[in-house]
Image 1 (cartoon, one colour):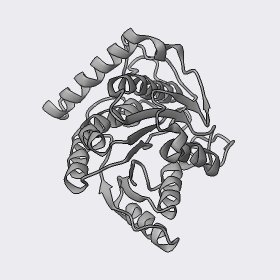
Image 2 (tube, rainbow, N blue to C red; image 1 turned 180 degrees about the vertical axis):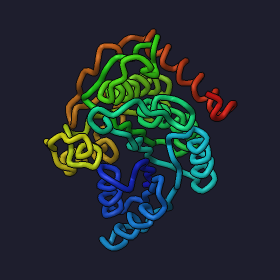
Image 3 (cartoon, rainbow, N blue to C red; image 1 turned 30 degrees about the horizontal axis):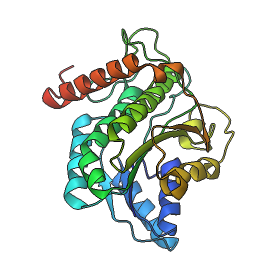
Length: 276
């Protein structure tokens, strides 16, 4: 089994990479720092895990780099059994201001949602060729509805709301993509792995961790490997339980507007890089 994990050098992504490699999976490690990628690969070897299938360097805050990442995956790997969209930017430091991606988009929406949206779409041919295959979107129980009049949060910015909007966007995409892929052998699900895991992302906010990486890791691993979930798609899980996301996720018109916005933003970034 070949598994691509974005954000594999820290936190949940690193936990998942180590565990999957220990269980014999071929992991493909993505990160934005080559030294940390090399260190994670060395940790896998040191723990006796299966040799990683490769490392991939890309900053997901720039959609051109997401595009190059997808090209590299398609060029280097004939098959891909699982894509785990895990990389994310947290709430930010308390009182922190609005941040932009390299393309001029609100940073949390860009990294947590839009990068995974584009990467997944670009990798669909490889996943479909590899079916049965799975897509796992690491979302959150913290969700906030998207205001399509101000999707980039230019008014009244708040890091917590920005993060929560990006996570709901992931779930909305999950529901749409599952319907699109029905009958193809490729499933897509989203989950809240655990509340405030002991990660760098949580510690930088001055919040007290409430869960361990093991808690979130086991819940995420289940979506990757559990044979009982082979036919399950389009579901949002709170850890291991099916759950109901924010009501906007059930609104087909809102999902359509998100899809149209996403395609417009991706197209603009790739056609006119850094024009904003």
